[in-house]
Amino acid sequence: MDSLQMANYVTPWRESQEPLATTPIVSLLTYSFTVTDAATGVPIAGALCVLYSSTGGTGEGAGEYTNSQGKVSITPEWFSPRSWGVTKAGYISQGADGVPFDIVVALRSTTVMYTVRVNAGVGGNTTPRGTITRAPGTELTVTAIPDSGYEFSHWLKNGQTVESRNNPLGFLINQDNISINAIFSEEVPPTDNFIETYRGIDIWREAATSKLYFTYQGSRYVFPVNTSIGTVRRSIDELLEEAPPNGEPPNGEVWPIVKTEQVFDNTRLAPGIMPETLKHKTKNVDTSIVLGGQISYTVELVSSILTGCTFGIAWNGQILEERGFLITDPYGKVKTGVVDIPLGWIQPNNVLTIGLSHVPAMMNVVVANVSVTLGYSSEPDEDPPWGTDWKEWLRKNWKWIALGVTGLTVLIVMRPGRQPIIVIPGGGK
Image (tube, rainbow, N blue to C red; front, side):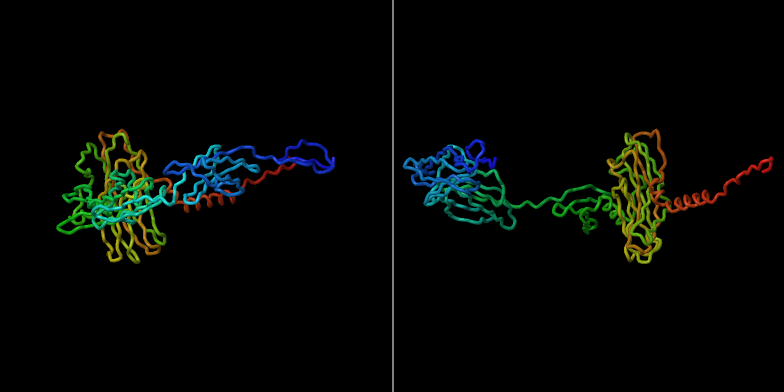
């Protein structure tokens, strides 16, 4: 068997010494086109209809012109068509991927133009504007431009409100004498949001910037974005030169059972050459009866090379308070405050963290006193004291632990063993 001939040819397998005469596989499928004028519905003769072997009107093509009935049938012989196209002078060409057996096409004349009138209401302008002509089936994009003090409201097309409020917006030109109107309305200045009244002073949030502020004796105090409400309260306390009583429930709430504990007592925070130092204490709380909590604190600047540090308080990893000491602050500067603990932050197991951060090696040192007040609806069955976080204890004492383990290992290795007993025949040792 010298050779076998096969593949894409209508020929059975058989032995052959010479190449066989073959017949290629041909497409015997017929596709029909019907082409009319989109405006009148009249059949269009002489429109070129083409079937293509690839998508997008590319590849090998097989084409024919429509007859007086606007019809033509095409049978491609060498490929299966994957796209089609129809062209005719004076009309907008059409085409698509995917080829049905009956293709009906309505061509739009390029000589017919539709009139579009674009106008703007009071308070703005549009681009484009005025009377415009566009070919049927095309899209006209209009942009509304509001004047100062106005804002874009909505579109009208032929007197009807357009559902989309997008600006700019594309309009399909599907008929003659279309009217498009941009409607504007006066801007309504945003209203600031009232937050609360604290110690007789109203605290507000600016609608435009989201900044908290309050007014006191004719002066307006505005705080940076994301400033906590606790920080604003502390500023009011400093202005009034007094802090609220220790453990006072917020917003006039009543706590039947109040328990206050000194958690950090004259605790020294000294980062030294490090960027920060942290201290942690833990507390278990019966969340079924807890009503809320407060933290009161005092922190005193003791020493530094160059003052400029921040004292912070966190509850379960969430920052509650930050107080900064400025470069100009003298030693002995004391800052105090009271901060509420959001009820949703109080968990069965809680961690209170205090810390001091600064530029490394500035040797800032502060002494902090922090107490926590928790309010309950009834006396808790168990009220364990604040304890040290064991993870912090390991971090703090790892050097001593390592030194102890090393020393114990050395003692075990160097410990003298028992002297061997040598037995000598005759009863001697």
